[in-house]
Image (cartoon, rainbow, N blue to C red; front, side, top):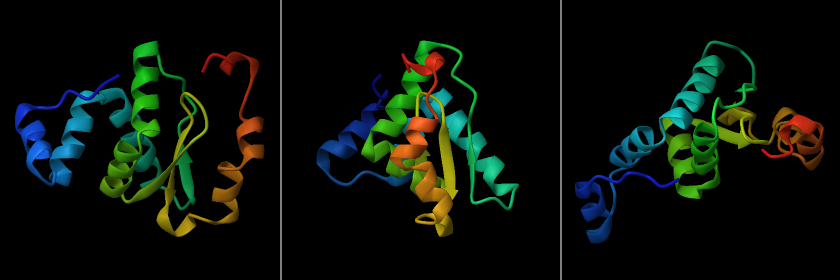
Length: 130
């Protein structure tokens, strides 16, 4: 799954630094399901006092699953989303993305979510192809 890069943004990348807002807009427009999912999780976090909020609903199709995987597997995309939303993202499987408050990064809750144990406990037979 590739980003759909507008010609002017590609030209900017070829000649020098890229505007952060333009990059984030490219991600938003290219990966709408991933953008919607991360936006929703961040909105859930903002309306609570919890250290994190997460998505537990699997993507409806493989295309949407691919968008989420693409967004969170790319260091640049993931970091751009984190800067844009002011959170730290964590990802356990094909759909369980979490947004942590920056103050919670490194906390027991964050360490548990991102641990090997947390990963294993989040698996199930229905997620094997995830």
